Image (cartoon, rainbow, N blue to C red; front, top):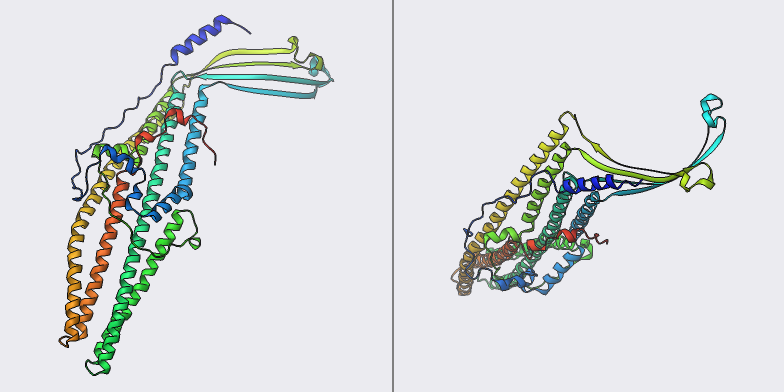
Length: 486
């Protein structure tokens, strides 16, 4: 069984060849990165400073609403999409361990007791007509040398895939957080608009009462009363209509925090939010901040490694197998020196003809690599577009909000003047209804613009990558750890 010379030769050969790994070594694809964003940030915003990193960890707290912060915390714990993404990451982590198993030998144990009868006569040989019980037990070991790097490339691919899955998890987390923040902001904006409508309803009710009194006194005609009532009922209908969108937003928030809509409600409350500036990073840093870009880049690395896996099929596989055991028909002889058997030796398997199978698999792996490179570059371009879009949105909305505030001020002054004219009998109630409706519409528009600015700020945080950094990707050592079970 022992042949030191043979074992030494095999060990030296495997050590010499183990450093080879076919296939291209990974090089990160180049992408065109602008030196600066085309859109300028709003006036009160500033470039990111090193001290801003600590503030980005819980970016939603910049809006200054404790209720929003509490809801986002529930997203991190109870959102089912996040749980599914986390489970996918654990699957990828387990796949890394499965791939690494190829580095090590296998060891199997077997045992059997077989009772048999041989044919009578010459056909039965020495055991003709006898009933024989054969007992066998043994160990079988095998190891395939990773001469051409197939296992190493497979591990490289699975590790990159697991890192991509980890980045996908963070993308799902940021998307859920941003979606909840957006829904919450829109809901609070609707609450403000609802209060505006309720205040207007109260004012319009007073106008209707005043017009009725003037009609009874013979000062105005019936048409003024009808106009006042029309204005009141129309505003009441608008207040009721807001309930539809508010209910839908409330249901969306319930879903994001992992609750059934029937088990969640958010009472009407004030808009206690502030529009805080988001620190801007350079475009080159965006590649390190966006988890979707990191996921796309890691998929490029995985596809590159799979080219090596496909190319390794062109080369022979070298393996070493050995068995050791005991076989006997007499129980007293089992596991004795006389019943022992063993074997050991190398084997080489060289594929000669496969009708183009290996070439097709290599071509497919290269095409997949090209696809992932294109996806990566498109993801980078899309990230730059999202940042530019939201910077433009915030800049334009800032100017629009300034003009709209002036329109609200003018509308309020117009209502005051027209009411005085109506009480003096100079104009009809139609004039009052027109300016009151204009004031309500302008105030609702101003609140709507504020809501758009808040949601655009959330979208910009998401476009900039939120709290994430590529340095948070799991390392090879971390991926080798056993996935934590829920």
